[in-house]
Length: 174
Image 1 (tube, helix red, strand yellow):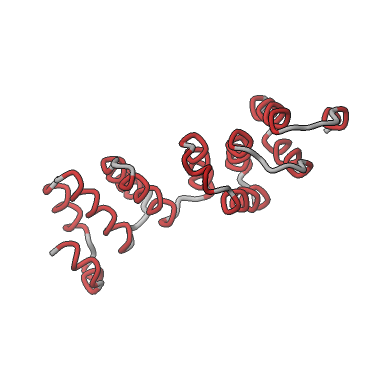
Image 2 (cartoon, rainbow, N blue to C red; image 1 turned 180 degrees about the vertical axis):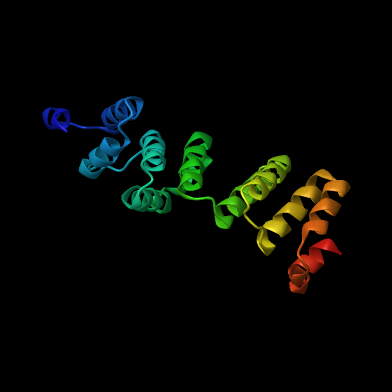
């Protein structure tokens, strides 16, 4: 990027501004290219833009960068809801999988939003993603938090018979 060559003292603010400009102009691949040139640790604003770029590009390079950034993200960034939303959006665009859904559901339960867990379960069913034992336990926990006996019974009725061999599930429903 020619503009980066003319700026001698690049800060997070400068990079964030350039990255946001590239995203706003539908150039997510250029965002990843500029990130490769950066020699400073990204702050929350930069990470949010990078997660957005990774989700838009969606190729192997973007997935590798996105997961690496997520794994190396400082723990104190976990309190930034906008950043986490951007990261979750990225992961969801990488592919609907049971681990992502379970993580999101558990996060909603932890943050006292069990109705959102139940909504995600409906999304999973719509997308033909089958719940595993962990998701079922999370859903049962969501029902318990809000006292929805009818929803609990509905979820239990959907549990395949082979899951009853799982002692943890049996402990939760009895």
